Length: 366
Image 1 (tube, rainbow, N blue to C red):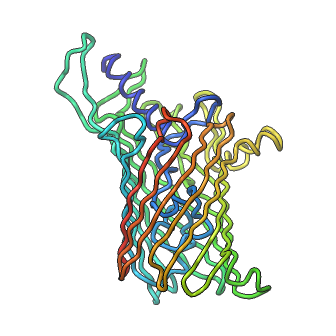
Image 2: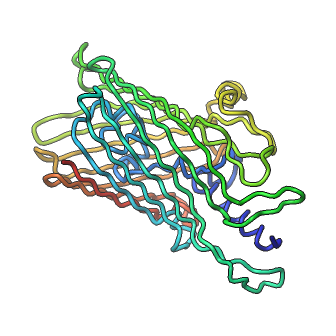
């Protein structure tokens, strides 16, 4: 393994990290396979990436698997995005495929999802810069299956299990005296709940929703040295949703999500996930507040049945913990069994890697 080739692998790792933790003024916590944090689904991405309290389609597999408990129809949901458009890398893209089906005999709904990040072709060279002819394709993917059921008419719980595969290099990587394959894999699970009051005051009944999702709980992922394995991006998300307006032809919902990485890392060492769930809450009230990502969103539907949607949102991350902030916009169309969604990111910074990022979605219900 030449120094140049190793540098390319390190560069790939950095590209993946800025996918979710681009930092211009502060320092964000780095993790392995951060592509798991990318918000799939054009619909909720257009709402500031706020889907935890809504989660009413197949993409609930990511936002809140407990949302599957309230869904009866069978659905296939696909999203595609030319990811990190601001970098100008045409072969870097993100795909997300999810499906769900209600099964009466199981008293619940099952789901499955496939997340894929194509990093692109890596050109290998020797120490003189000559191509070796051993070019390869780098990518990451995760496959998950889930189940959700209602414990009461207004409360659902869900669980996911996930297999994670990260291929940064197909060849042996040597760093000092340590040798690894350049490919890592791990497993993880999610635990989630969703509450939609079906009784109570008129201002709450069938209007308010509250959700939480504890995701990516699992062992670290190793590429070269097991002692320096990277923690998974364990995260807790809490979401609120409220239906402001519902008439025959108009439907307006506002949402808010708050999320935090449960990762405690110092240099090359990090706590296992079951310990980091407690040790990552540090820095006092101020430190904890700065580590929380927040977002708000709104969705307006016109038609009966729903026909056209307009969406908008805002995502914010503290300058000391990543410094991402951007406006999201989106539109949606529903016709018969089909749905089409589109979302756009405005980062307020022309040279930001996420600038002008687009997501395109299509879904089929049957």
